[in-house]
Length: 485
Image (cartoon, rainbow, N blue to C red; front, side, top):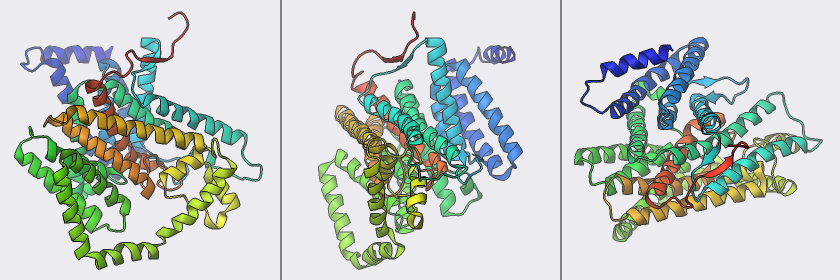
């Protein structure tokens, strides 16, 4: 009742506004996200547990009410991006793997989405897309693997008190990230939402790299670890190459921020190969999409630079990697495949191979540092096959999308090229140790902050694909519909 009277009062105040109400409401909420997120982030960093919990609960209540009243899940999508970028609140679980605010917000919004479908629309549906079948099947396999692994765990394997909680949280992450992808790909039907999503991520990246480079106090509020630099560089580079509608000053600014990120991940963080190899790969893909001649010239320049500095990079990368023990990962992968051979179909369940390692290989109980070995260990051959099928379908859809838009020089083609390049970078990143789906006992559940960017932007690419390439099958697929409806 109170909410209704407040809304009526605001509507009366805005009745004479020359700006269309829907547009005004949208930009007011977006501006509110930008203003509120750093403030909330600061409280979460500085405040005690009680202010954090109260603020988190209030934020969840207000967010749920806004989504319910407006009926626009797109605001929830923007809230996920802003929370991942600015809010550093972590909910303790009694373990070292804390639940971050972006995961809580994602679960809230996904819950509102599902509840809206079941209670209002009376059926659970998703719009057709070429990635639906492998992704939904993968999510189902994660649930089945969780049940199977607990029902048929080796009798000699011993778990510890916190493991059930960690396993449930891991399952939540493995379902929430694809859920975010499905939310974006299903709800975004206007280019404007993709523009706002892209610029939220670019603003996060610009603010973060300036804060990191010059040691500003604001550096503590940004969530830009893991694969984030790859996505920032991919988007910024694609906008510079393709979007000719942008003011030249904006494009020059993007070049500057991109250069700072390249300095940060390559020249300063050379041993962090998962920071710069996927980013440069994404840039290579985007360059190839723009021009074959430009690709050849860029390739020659890179080879010439490496030839001149060969000894330096050999010492700093190859030799240093050996000293750091990076090549010990081959032994970790061998141990992992040996475990998978004993649980081939469904693996050991979410986070499950940790208890097997501690039982059978306590002297070498380390994570695989590889997203694909993690997935096959947790969900078996069935799970990894569906996971790879999803990425193959997504990359092919992204290429088809770019082919349709390739003669444009605007946001749409820039977003298509940037997300396709970023997707290729994400696929490669999984091999190098930065998780697209974080593992609970390495990057921990806190890695959701970094991983969710991939699923937001890949979902955006699929949303644009549906708008520009086609519905790919006509009407929405009904997953659940009560009898008599």
